[in-house]
Length: 496
Picture (cartoon, rainbow, N blue to C red):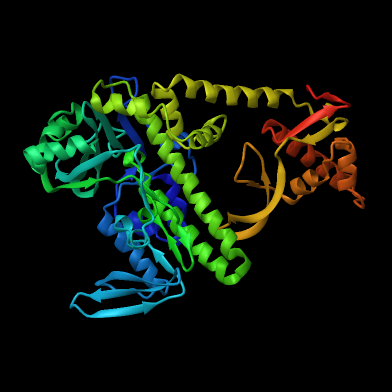
């Protein structure tokens, strides 16, 4: 799991149960990857002080905690019922057909169907929505071991990821001395190897090809598996429709390099609940909030996808067909996705993985230069802004900057808000009432001082006027640094 899931667990009220389950606490990750010939570690506390750890969970126990919590919260749970077919009429989904363990069939009508069926993706497959991702033509072979060695303290409960000639391996320490161990290899090469040697022998061959992972398993024995998952990176053409929402792996799945699956599932689950609630509460939100749900989910998915793609491209610890082909793939791809990733990591607080990519990997020169250019431009603009001079300068909205009313996801719900749309933030960023009022009054003629005067008309308190003035200058500094606003003195561009 990732720390990003911890607030969701806290909101659900299950953190106490998580502690009682005695799941190992995951403080970070240890990797043999990038330029370094030896393993290196990073820790969540470096970028997340509120939640410095996550958990390495055993899924049957973890899933039962969540299911029992749902049942205790009033959810009707029907176990032993397999969904066979969604009920669809005129493009609207209105329920499902299901079969019980004793073979009886039934129908469940519903106003909304939330597809959380994982990689089975029942609704996505029925509607032919799945779109495979050619950038990640990988497969995984994995099993569970008892007695695996652990990393030395303080990294003994970290996930360990090791790149090797044919791909990469993971070793995840779980409770009761169990470890999840898998290898990720090229799908075509892996399927050929399995046909030639069988799953068990091929899995053993791959583990034997690793340096550190094989040593960690020298004292262990396998108790479950190996199992195979292939063709696993995909997304969906649509994630929301009339009466339905896709969540988790039912909507999309990206290469598991960064343990993003549970995070994406929980994030989309929270947003799906908020979306259905908003659509029932305010019918005007139904269509617009659906667009925002999909936009937010795709943005988060794309961030992990681009991160994984760049991490593959930046690895220099191995020279082989697997790594060379992925370094070539790493140089191309979706330019919009890459630009979004650059905006997200350049000069922004890291979420943990990003700086590991930038600092430890051998990134494509063009990408590193792009990030440096964005960071340098932001620093230059931040240094150039002088509040005293800005008071008598004229703010001008940059080209393409506008205010729009659209739904945002905040405080656990979808609600109408004013957002700032700009070339830097094409999806829009929510702004405060003050910033919206400021931007709506910027006309390229009035100085900042005059705009403050207009915003404080009728305000008699000197303290309140001073507070508004400080807030406007601070907002203007942020907008200027972000490139949303230029500040001009007379007809000349403002230079600080």
